[in-house]
Amino acid sequence: MSVKTPSRLEKVLDSGQLAVTSECGPPRGSDPEAITRKAEMIKEHVDAINITDNQTSVTRLSSLASCIHLKLMGLEPILQMVVRDRNRIALQSDILGAASFDIHNILCLSGDHQTFGDSPQGQNVFDLDSMQLIQTVRLMRDEGKFLGGDPIKRPPAMFVGAAANPFADPFEIRVPRLAKKIAAGVEFIQTQCIYNLDKFELWMKQARDRGLHEKVYILAGVTPFKSAGMAKYMKNRVPGMDVPDEVVKRMAGVPKEKQAQEGINICVETIQRLKELEGVSGFHIMAIEWEEKVPEIVERSGLYPRPKDL
Amino acid sequence: MIVANKKPIEEIIEMVKGYRKILIAGCNECVTVCEAGGKKEVGVLASSMRMFFMNEGLKTEIDEITLERQCDHEYLEELRNSIDQYEAVVSLACGVGVQFMAEKYFATHVYPGVNTCFMGVTEERGVWSERCQGCGKCILDRTAGICPISRCAKRLLNGPCGGSTKGKCEISKDLDCAWQLIIDRLKELGRLDEYEEIAPIKDWSTERAGGPRKVVREDVRQ
Image 1: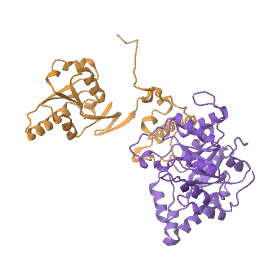
Image 2: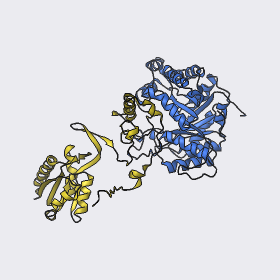
Image 3: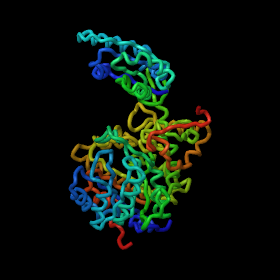
């Protein structure tokens, strides 16, 4: 793989070093400090920062505007974009808008169904699916064309990512689905939060058997539990999440005031084990409303300092 | 068939309580099969309405009829000679029938008696579910005969999404994941490798997005 965009994330991955990304959820209001404050906490410990796009279908400050705030701070945003809320006109328009601010990373997603959020009575769009959004960004970047075929002046220069959930069903389709995203043109993957390491390793083995780890950079997703309650919630309530019983038990087995630390410990141990796994190119740390813990996780995992002067 | 569900009687009464001579018109097609607007439902609604008006002390005449179809001129014409004697019609046909009635009898008040839901099947008596959204460009050849547009909550053409759990959709444990069904059937047919063919971006212009649709067939047109 050779570098195709000015993306810093792409350069880190291309250099063969383990990349570290994290994410910030935008606020339910218009205060830019809600974004910049979170970014300040983690900026020295990550290579790029995802900005979620109305995650769980709850209306928030827009992903694109938040990415611009990060860009103005001199940081490297990853624009998350879901196909739930935008048709192909809006998607391409927002991609150009991001490109005009030299935002060099995009994560193409379907998006949670709107029934989960604050507007369950709203329409959804799904004009394209996530696979087709990957194709669209690649078309715009590589061929300098809109979906309609017209040329783009100053095409977007974006490193194209997508999500993969090794734990959703049916399991047998999860590696073929990764292969399909690669065929669509994806260049990096951030996975769903990993708690079932055995299953993740099996998925990665199947991916390696097809040589997929050489065609795409896979960043393993991790989320520290804040409490045993959160572990139970993730296990039972979040679709497509696989939290083994022993992990829930481990969280519940320590006193309440020590559970947060135990959650961090599990997270660090996960990273340390997966650092050795062939096919893992980096980590995506999703510390939900707990960004201040990212530096500790990165340092204890031996992923600090982050590369400079690429 | 087109599947409809009965509107609450209170809602219907609210629409027509000001009229003193009302026709309730059922339809002998889809809404009969899904037990929302056939002869039987016309009778039940008429009795309930008579009871309501009687209790209110409002002398109101309610007639019943069930047409063979309300989406064809031929059958709707059967009302031509009697329609003027009614102040209002409650049509228990699907939205298509209600509209065709309103188009044809321009000066008559026509009200809907059912909520038209979708094109679907009878899974078992009392249970109907969606199968088609009439996108105008069928892709069932590529999806093992199971439609992701009507049966996937995100109408993903390259699913399943990350929310598919134990064969169920992320939005409800009562809803099958369409892509699980597609994959199961592709496997059964020995065609699982077809899953990796990327479904192209869909042309939605033949769907609702392209505006109201019309089929004109010169070969059968008179």
